[in-house]
Each structure stands twice: as structure tokens, then as C-alpha cells.
Figure 1 (spheres, helix red, strand yellow):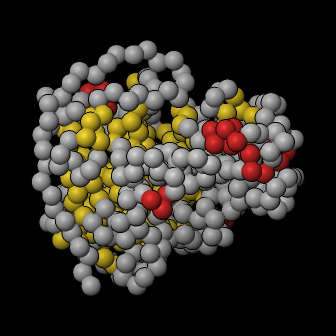
Figure 2 (spheres, rainbow, N blue to C red):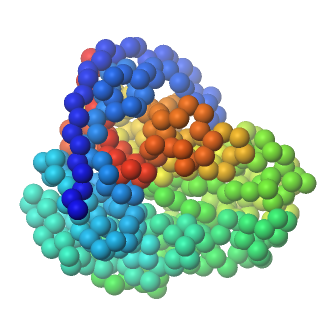
Length: 423
């Protein structure tokens, strides 16, 4: 059965002036200029932007990469034979590969992709087409997968290194995972092989843990990460922990369970520790708090040696994609800023949040203003109570050769192309 590909028209709209603001350092969200224009594939976008669907029904479309020629590679979270990767060329889609996974990056003459245990690379020709799609080179193998936070997301630097997320197979390193009142395991042995970012060589075959370096630790699960070429530094988006109210109602009320902890963006350097599972970040108090599994009560702070986030988002919004925009198509305010795909929550007691693409402005390598909603209405439901109601959930992000932004959806396997046409 062939993959269905849908091509839609697009609509240009007038742009409006953006409001000015002073950055206060908090996680305030801007809602300005968000409009729903006919022809925008159901999305709400800032004025002057347009969206079109370039592919549909691909399956669980996760991360994405676009070649200089405009071909699109999409990692499919499917273990069905021949369905691991989709390539879209001139409006037609083909699939190949046999492994389930999330990671997808193009760097130089290689396409890098991951399963939940391994990292592969495919040699590309001078048109960035895969030379031998059925026989990739295996560059990393034997990574831990215990079917919780198992995705091995990828980023590459400019010095021949590849960075791999190895998520913690636990919520908070409890003796009994996600059990009410269960305490944390002393020393959290999970951190030996998971709960962080590992660095490997991008051109060495069959590497294992012994060949890699634990680049950063104390990160519960990172699905979105990107190498910031302006700063020459790795940035990641952590999925914050769950269950503060459910497991420790003596310390947290229902509202706190919904709103804590923050989803955090970290700028990493080798040897950094973000503090999981011993702490979490309270985006309301703007403090690192001692986790209840390790003696916290919602009041005690902790993690003096743990790094601070550079940006925080509301709880449980699931940041699955991160992209620093280096193109020239979008207005100047977007240059070097960060787009974040927020996959959407499942565990708020009343009303879920997320299901959008956010934008964080950067200047001189640092956030220069509060994050704002860039693309919304993926869910297609005004007051969503369950992720099962969502028509679409944004996951992966990529920049096209013309400076357009590509966004994947892993509900129906839709790929959106967002362009700017305003003046």
C-alpha cells in the first residue's frame, strides 16, 4: 500500500507590527498576532505566515530532516518492515528501513537515524540521496531500552561528534516506580547508563557505552535537542517529572500537581548535571526544589551544584522538538531564536496543555524575551481533556533550504511546511 501524499495550496496574508516588550526573565507567554487564516492547514499562525500540508498519513512521524535540494526525510516510529524512514521527493513518498525510533539528522554527506537501542548513518550522494537505503552503517549499538523514555534523539556538532539522549527508565528513581510515597533509590544507579546525554564519534562504527562519554547527566528525558552553531553549544529540552500530587499529596495539592515542575531548556557543557532525580525546577518560584523522594516537601530547595535552565515552559507540555532558526526567510526577530515543538500533556487533572509550536527569541546567545506561541491549533480541539482527542500533535522540527519551517505530527503522520510571505 502506497503512502498517501497530499499537496495543498497556500494563502498569503498581510503582516502586522509586532509589539515591543521588556524581558523579565520569567516564562510568560505572548499571544500576540496569532490568527487562523483560511488555507493554513487548520493552524493558527502569526500574520504574514502561511502553512501547507506536504505529506499525510505517514504513520508516527517523529523527527525530520530536509536536504539542500528540498527532499524530506522523516523518522517513523514503527517497527513494521520497510516503514522506519519516509523520504518525500517531488511530492511522492517512499519508505524503507525496519527499526522503530525517533532520531533523524542530516550532517554533511550522511543521514543519521536512530532506533531505540542503536544509531545508524546512511551515506548520501551529491544530491543528498541515500546511496544504499537497506544497508546503513551502525555507529552506536547496545544502548539501554526498558520501554520508558526509550527514544534516542540525536544532534551533531561541527567537530565530528554525535550526541545521543538516553532517557531514564523511571519517573523519579523511586524504589517502586510511580508508587505513592515510594522513596528514591540512594545514589540513583540509573544514572550510570541513562538519564543524560552521551557523546560518541560520528564516523566510528559499532561503538558501545565504553566508547562514549557521558557528556551531561541529571536529565530525565530529552526528546528535543539541537546544536547551536552561533554559540557552538548543545541545547536540550527536558521532559519534567510527573506525579507530585498523585504520589505525595501530603506535600502538594491538585493545582501544584498540574503546574509543577517546569519543562526546561538547558544549555549544556561537558560535565554538566541538571539535577534529576534529586531536584526539579519550580517555574513559578523560579527555584530548584528538593524532590519529595529525596526529602523534599514542596518548600525545601536543593541542587546547589545543578545547572539552571535558560528557559522554562509550563508543566507537562512535552517538548519533543528543538530547532535554532538560522534561515533568512522569516523576519529578523526569528534569527538565531529557538522553535520548540510541544507535543502536549496527558496527565493534567483538568484540561491538557501544549499541542503547539513555541518560539523563544535569542540575542547574543541568550533568550531576549519571553516565549510565545508561534503555531497553534494542532489538536483541533478548543478545550482538550485527553491527548486521544487531538487530531495532530507536533513532534519534529526542521529548517528547509529556503528558510521555511517543517513540523511533523505523530498522530496522522502529517508534515507541515510553514513559510513567510508578509512584508
